[in-house]
View (spheres, helix red, strand yellow):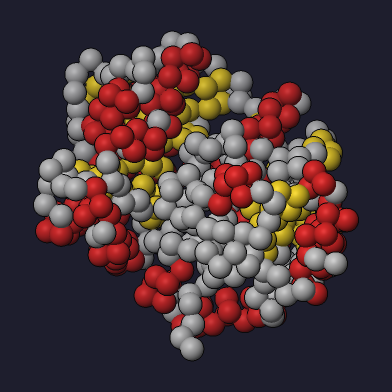
Length: 471
């Protein structure tokens, strides 16, 4: 009996995709940078089915690429071109298993879409604070496997900070039931941390217990024009001190970002009356202080007094606040019509953000004269999306051919500030062979030993995360 026939016995006819045309959406990532081939797509509906699929693949030495919503930006969920791998998609695993309002937790299947978790928490008077641009299609299992970040990391932390327990199918098919909702559990190694950020290389996350937080009763957003990036860092400290640490998000937005959104997104106009080079989008949240608009005004007044604030827009309705958030969220998509863009997802210490930008801009101007820097992101946690855009007079492919040289320059500068070459997108296929340049031999050796201990046959997401080894 063939692999396909045996898998069909496990998951049923609806749990398999074998036609090439039907598989297409699983084989290409959003940026169109990576495209692969697969024997088939298997879509189990339960943890037990995942276990049976993995046991069969282990016996037949068939490599598995775990895939959630396929929103990876580093090729982490795309197979290679050999066609020997299968994709294990968690799309059908979308149950909300348990809502615990007393303990403030959700127990969910890995295939639950992030926006659905947010809605369930909201319906029960709570919030789930992970907010990212792909929340309408990404899945919590993928968020966990990549340790996703988002706009509220400043206040609530990364995905790693939201997870209390996991259920994981190991490479030999055994099920590890670590679905605890304990806040304190000091019984040795915290095993769940191996799989959070593990990019599916050590096992398949099938379920999770995540934290819910009290839902803020009041929120206030402001779009603020600032003198420069250094002023943004200063304003962050000022706002946190004056608000009693009620700043839940602060996002850097450049002039070019607003220009691209107003140019390419229908019915969108510049919220500011005048043009400024740099802006920050600031959000205050509270369940106690009702007059957040007044508090925001007081913070802005102090910013004006310190000559770091140039102008501000404070929306008066929820709809207007959402419009400002839409401005920030549309920057990524608005880059596409402008041509080639070389993406970077770096982090540096918050205080080093201005110097990083200055050094990176100077270095890249020497490599690609007249490049257009698109620099935006989560300055509250030091995470920038530093995306050089092709010069208007340059051919797109000629620009994209410089990706390795440009990325090494950007990553070297981030590393010189003791930063990271991947703040929230992960390593995947894109950055795996960059790791030896920035991680010590000891770190990489430990990572390899963990991989070998849990997946000795290298069947789980092979060729991702870990650097290639020379034969």
